[in-house]
Image (tube, rainbow, N blue to C red; front, side):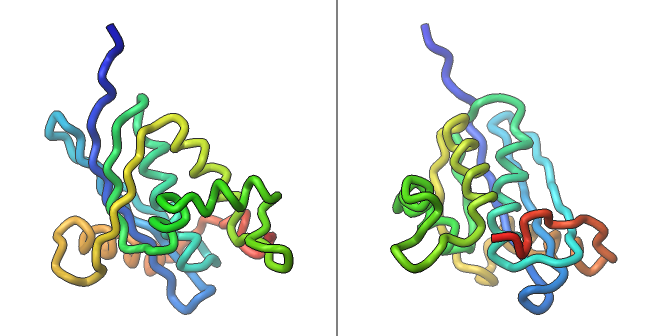
Length: 160
C-alpha cells in the first residue's frame, strides 16, 4: 500500500527595497498536524521577483519529506511560470523565453522545478495587501528581513 504524502499549506512572499536593492522573503508553513513554522532571510542586493521565487524555494526545501503542498503567493510571475508550464518550456529551450530573449532567474527556476518533482505542488495566487492573514505575515517577515541589515549574498543576482 502506497503511503499518502503529508498535506502542507505554504504562504510565501518576497519584498525588495528599490528594485534591484536589498530584499527578503518570508514564508509560513502550516502542517496538517497543526504545527506552524516561519522562515525569512534578507539579501544585500537582489530583485523582487528573485525574492518571490526564493521564498517558495526556502519553504519547499524546508519540508522534511515529500508532501502534497498548497502554496499561496501574491506573485503572478511565480504562479504563472509554474502553473502554465512556462518554466518547463524555458528549460526545454535552454533557458530562452523566445528566439531573442533569455529567461530570467534560470538558477531559481531549475531549483523550483526539482522541488516540484519531489513534492506535489499546487500554486494558488492570493491578492497582496488584501487582508489575508498569512500573506500579510509573510510580507512583514520579508520586509523585516531586508530592513535588518541583510548579510546574505544572492549568488545568482546579475549573472543571468
